[in-house]
Image (cartoon, rainbow, N blue to C red; front, top):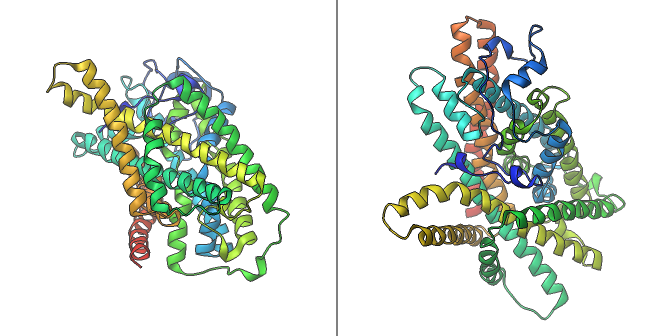
Length: 480
């Protein structure tokens, strides 16, 4: 599978930035030396930001830093923030609060690594236009040590596998979210209705399959715009009730236990998952250098996202305490406004499922169609059948995952500590080393070599630790 071939919605609609594919075409550029990109992200005095921007990115469609920030925030803030009070319950009040800021900082640093590597790799290879996450890993190996240059395709496929696993996990989480909220609304409207969660999961297959048949890009753009508005309204409604409510701060533990912290980390990592969104945005910007830096798009965006996440988790937990559910919205009373909000959120996540499905089908379809065309003659009909079969297959896989792990409090941490942790920490640290270490060795920049290795060893080790500990904790939690 090659997610690097997936089409991006952002270049066609401008309303939603989906991961996996840049949308800009970059002209060939002159070679930029490694000294143009220092370890602290600065640019030498003899090279202006304007020159670097012109050399690196000339796009068909360019966006300003402000628009890139808005799109980044839209892509980052989603239903995952409603599960953060659960992370606070699992780890403890102030431990969870600190954990959100720590994960936000680590995420920001690793996202900057991706952008820095992408800019450096494209500057050294004029034939390379723009790079998505998987292509960047591939190119990093190709420009690295001789022993790695023939294995770039392995790095690309591994990143694509992680991205695919993440999207499937997100689809399953969306599936459960929609079923939980729809079931709660139906039970409130018809108290005599007796229906199990498994029955709801099975019934939901039909609308999800019908939704998957939508192929119109224009329709998906309208859906995305409406979804963004509804999400903002929902967050405003939630905070309007959390802030004035009675709070239980003194009664809540500051720290629970190691197992709880690991589960909470997976939850928080999932909420911050947006690595695949970074490079497509950077490739569309008028001035790519504005993506990094203390006041860049990444720093500003992650800071705002962290504040929203910390506030949602903190106030949600001190309002509902140990009774907080897997999504804060399920704790809210059944007044008409809250019921309306739950319906809106269910619709937002339901339509958001289509956008996630789009990225995965666009990446898988070319390979499947090539395979099918080699064994058939009526290629036009076969292409259509393959496309619909693929969409149905993804829905069925997400349904099976939802049945196997039907609770958001179990599934979200599992997705976070596996694909999420690999994409957020382990892969960026690895790519940073394979990109810059050969150059630093060649130029005998020993101080930078030590800094590079210590820096990335920390992030790599941290990621591996949470993957191992997270898998162990989540499996024990599921079996227990």
